[in-house]
Image (cartoon, rainbow, N blue to C red; front, side):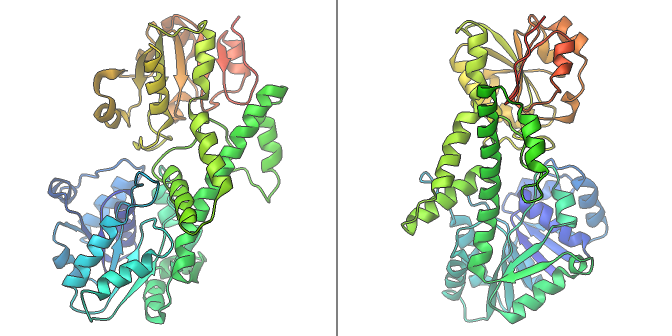
Length: 438
């Protein structure tokens, strides 16, 4: 099948590459000429493990194409996926201007029946708005489908090729048949495709992400309480997760959630609720708790140094909001950097993947190390903000040689407590006892 993807951001590029891998001819459209030219030459504009190999394979197989010309791609395709940004406005609501502008363009350009598939995360009722915009420009028949994505950054290729489910919202039998054909390679292997109405499909994405944000935040609250009463959150987590009604995933405490999805989607659902005179009290509490959780270790750092961080050098391991991505949107590292700088500390950061993105935001406000150990040179303390695999088994002897003080503040609970203890480090993590240096 011939398919157009409008937007080559994270969702659009992974979706387009996956659909090409499934045997379709995919035309990816983006207004950024430099970006499109780079992709034509095999340059993947985002960091995502295993994406480049699949990307290059499908370009070589002539199933994956890139253009700035929407009309050209539209004329070749029966199905058009909208994978456009829906950034939060000042009031937290999702900005639909990109989606509706492209819908307007499609209405003006289309010459035959199309299925318009909304892949972006959008508020309930967006499919109706897209339909209204297109209808105002053409009498040619079309259908609008809601088909939310459930990709995890860092595991997007795995998730795209082995989804837990495919959700399709449509009231059109013709559109359902076309979507079933696209996803037949998945349903042939037992992956379910769940058909529902458009509004339920749109809400499913918000509900799923918001629930996971709540689950993470609840575990962080439990972790903070563990510290008050002397319990160990790791043991609590294992005990809870062994209940199959709860499960082990998203029970890892830390310095809050970030990224492009959870913060934005929680805000948008809260705002959507208010527009219907409905208050999502749990989500409002989740937002408040998460905001505080992101910088919860700063007060511990300050207390360790007697209430004064002026002139202290803090080594920071990890800048991305999570491992295996270069995404720094809503990253806890940035919240901590800004607060530590405000308190007079000096930051030397290391992140092999996300550094360039942080440089665009912070410039020379902090220093950037070429390696995890270089960041430790004469550091008063180490702060771990991202759970990159390379941080999991460090050389503690080398760390001790490089640092002024054997002090670690771990926002991701990277190490069993006995490891820093055996190596004589002061070690403060989340929801566990503090190890005092020998």
